[in-house]
Length: 146
Image (cartoon, rainbow, N blue to C red; front, side):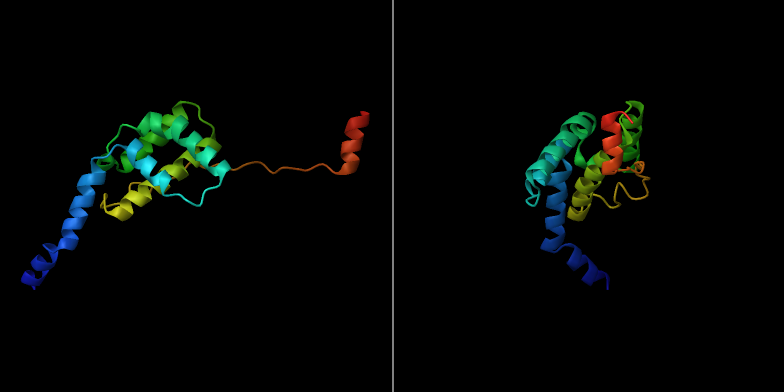
């Protein structure tokens, strides 16, 4: 049994994983995020603008120089806490966390992490208030000063 396991472990499949970890683990988050973004072919123009904004304003300034192999749940938690300290709104925090989660999930699927770095993290909760759309009569009353 041990011989079978060792032969499977030494097979090229195991080497491919080691090569992926060496290549992508040493990559900085900024580089990895750029490659990840290039693979998002289904994004519309507005979504690309939104993604660029989240990356440039929230993710890259705090995480851009970090090596991919160094991410764990403590790093993700510190990222959320630093957004809170900087007064970032809850909607922006939730959006930035969602993008970070998507990027790190992609890296996890490549095998860079034994445990998913966002597993067990409580995401920022944005609960918008209910919006009331005024009726045409109410709008008319507002225009006439009533």
